[in-house]
Image (cartoon, rainbow, N blue to C red):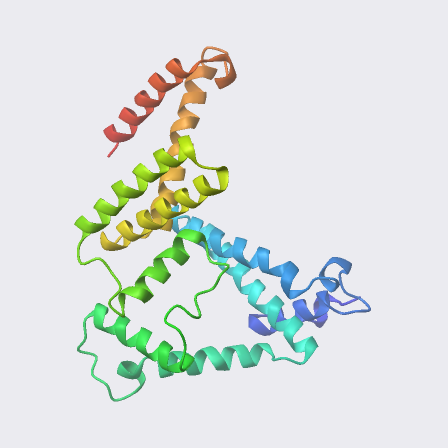
Length: 268
């Protein structure tokens, strides 16, 4: 058993020692010992989403906690990599430090800082492409990204080589076309074909968001939060009469929804 008094008193060394103790094959936690990169990866994604959620809510104490959870995920993967002889946590830190220096020559080198954010973004992507070496345009975009986020990255990458609609108008035309195809598919095609048409529609919606400089993932998160908030108000109002949504009907709940919507707008 590891004594708390044996741990470093503070800082990243303390966290690294805790992680090593959890994974100790003789005295560690049985659950932690049996984990692998694959089993921990879903928790890593979950913690990243919880960081984004705390930021959306402007919940700064929660953000401090969630950032710690996300940091722990990095430490966890680095500990497993060290055990397997792949790399250490120090290697991770060195790699990201070198990468940030290389990608910011206007801060750490002799390039001018007199650039727009858009130009700096283009330079950043050009540097990443140079690091990747010869590759296809869409290589290197993680498959595990949320689908809307990955669609946005695919479209941005294709747009950099000229494969893009010139204006929002063409995207809107395509959106109408895809929506029409979904309606047709609903009546005449198989479920697999309907699924494909829905995917096409969502992909165009992501492209429309990109042209309007909207993050589709953030927009959908906000819409989810709005729906949750308004439906909770419906439940509150029904509870005042001793009922639940199951005791109501669509017409009543729709009217309450409009009331919640008006209440939201009045608070803007």
